[in-house]
Image (cartoon, rainbow, N blue to C red; front, top):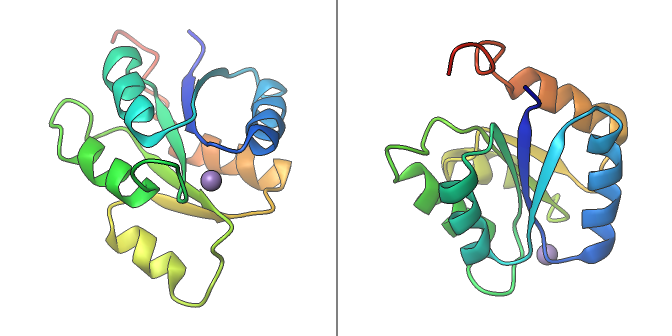
Length: 128
Ligand code: MN
């Protein structure tokens, strides 16, 4: 079974780029362009991993993360923040906010795929 990755991102160029990078890794990508749409997609699609942009048009990526982590049926899904806000202290802020990982833009394909492999549960595709 192919792992499903949800990417919550309002910038079409970033979406296209990441979709292309993940596509070469053989993953199924679900796209959401707002925070609320992303939370809905997490509930309905039960992805194996979530990438979330921080600056979104409605609620921000930290709020998205907090809402997903507050849902007992979703809280085990790893959430990785993808952000251009690569400032001192951001990494700690995002990890304290509930994200499982953090990648600063611009995203490198190698780094992205390494992160996916690190966070995908090898047992997730078994009998579940
Ligand atoms: Mn954005």
